[in-house]
Length: 406
Image (cartoon, rainbow, N blue to C red; front, side):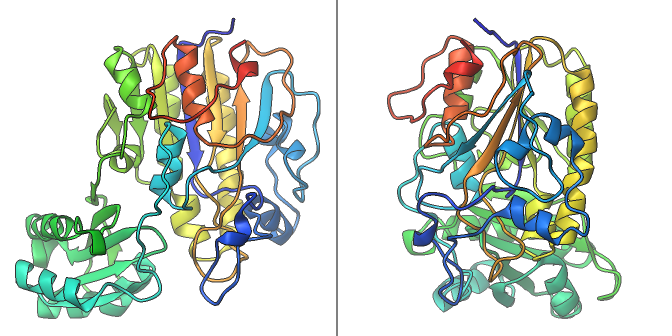
């Protein structure tokens, strides 16, 4: 039986690989459904010479779909490749990550992408915080700074905005509003947004610095005020049994600290991979799960409908992924996956309901191949538990992938 001491799960945030079985039931503004969306394939089509990802190619990526620039390699004995459908009702960050760890979400998180937040919520927020609210729409974080940053400073107001995720984001200047005041206002917003009619998964503090629209820049002092998972997760079970659950990037925020033993903050995809490589090389992470999120694929390129930038980011990741594979140990398992799609060629700016890739690499494997599509992201978490001889809670979903731990 394959027994791994350390398992790395790296989420290429939003890098889906073709419409899920029920993609026609999900859509974008204007009535365009997600049927036909395919983040990997359409990025490959937009790249002038296709995608150059020799590391992922060598592990069998090309068997998952026809991706321009990616050859079909069938001889990849050290890796299994699979496509996963999402069982939960949603296509957002929290739903996808929670499902990986065993939670089935039947009621999607509320979003306010099309309309902004209700007047009643904005009025309450103004009264409770003592600040005027400006913005109140779906927007890019950098663009809304250019548009409203100077007004925010001048009027001591709060910029409130959202995205296609279930989030309420509050933007304020670190120097003129102050970090403590921004955080206080976000705590008030979190309390208000626990009401069912205004419920969102996360309230996010988005501080910035600079003196004009040309120089404004968001800082690393972002803080997320999330809700805890709706049930027990694989992370909880690992932690309860004395195993490491080391979380890199925004994983800690997504799970509101539940089931987390170590948190490593990151500033970019590159930084996230560098820190994951250091964890793999070091001796502190001995046994358990290292759970990594690389958010820039989604935030910087998917929502901004920038397929070329997205493609280049994937190519950069491929190089760093090769560095990681060079330092992992013989009894490590590495899983590459995604939490949803965000096809940068699709209508609107929303996530897309897609299957996600699962590429599993270990030097212990000797008969790697393409496996059949599976019905839930939760198979990741259940496989991890089975590897460590642990059982999932009766409330959890997921079936172990036999080939990985046979």
